[in-house]
Image (cartoon, rainbow, N blue to C red; front, top):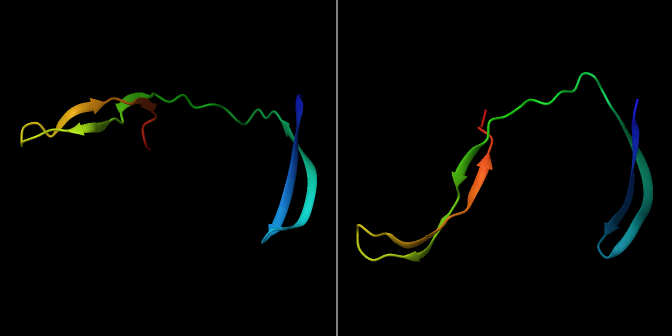
Length: 74
């Protein structure tokens, strides 16, 4: 069994004053009940119009592509 420690530091503030400061550790261990579920990602263009066009048939003169991969929504 593999154990990995994660170290955390924290501060609790009220206005500009530190009320409490501390540290703690968290341990993570493997579990046979957790598994990955494969997802089929689809490429989607999240682009935007960088320069508006003129007229009814040309609403955008310059389109900037921003292709990302997304998992389908359940």
